[in-house]
Amino acid sequence: AQKITQTQPGMFVQEKEAVTLDCTYDTSDQSYGLFWYKQPSSGEMIFLIYQGSYDEQNATEGRYSLNFQKARKSANLVISASQLGDSAMYFCAMREGSYGNKLVFGAGTILRVKS
Amino acid sequence: EPEVTQTPSHQVTQMGQEVILRCVPISNHLYFYWYRQILGQKVEFLVSFYNNEISEKSEIFDDQFSVERPDGSNFTLKIRSTKLEDSAMYFCASRAPSDTQYFGPGTRLTVL
Image: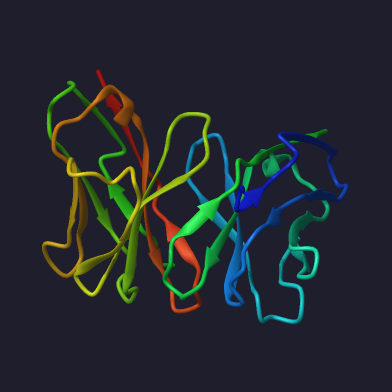
C-alpha cells in the first residue's frame, strides 16, 4: 500500500482564493511527522509546514495551514489568498517512527494559480 | 538564514564514470540524507547518515553508491560507475532539532 497518497495530480485556483491540496497517509506507528514541500519549476524543495502526530493543534505558517485529521489519516494543506508565485508542485511527506528517520513522499500535486 | 548547499548544480558524465556530489549541511544539524528525483517522478530516499555512519539505506543504494563525511562540514555521495538510469536530481538534506528536513538546491546529474 502507498504510504502517502496525493489524489490530485493537478489543481487550478483563482488568484486570491483559497485552495486545499489533499494528502492521506498510512502508518501503524504512533509517532510520525507530516510535512509539505513546494517545488517550483526551478527544482528546489522548499519546506512549508510540519505537523507532529502528537500535536493537537493544526499547524499554521503564514498563508499555509495543515488540516490534520488523525482518525482519517489525512493531512491536507490549505493555502489561503493564493498568489501567482504559488504555482508549483506540492509534495506531502511522512517521517515514521524515530526522529531522524527518512521521509517518504507522495507523487505530488501541480498547482496552477490563474490571474 | 543557514541553508544546505550543493555542488555542482549540474553534472554531465559518461556512462561508467565515477561522480562525486557534494553537500554542505546546516552546521548544527546531526542527521544528513540523500534523496533523488527522476524527472517527473516522486522524490525517493537513498541513504541517511548519523554519527559518522549510515543509519538507513534504500534498495536503490547498492554497492555502486557510497557516502562520506570527510571533514566537519562536507557530506558527499559517490556513484562509482554511473548508469543511464542514474540520471536524476540528487538532493541533500539535513535535519533540524525541530524534526524538519531542509533540502539543498539539488544537483542535476545527466549520464550520457
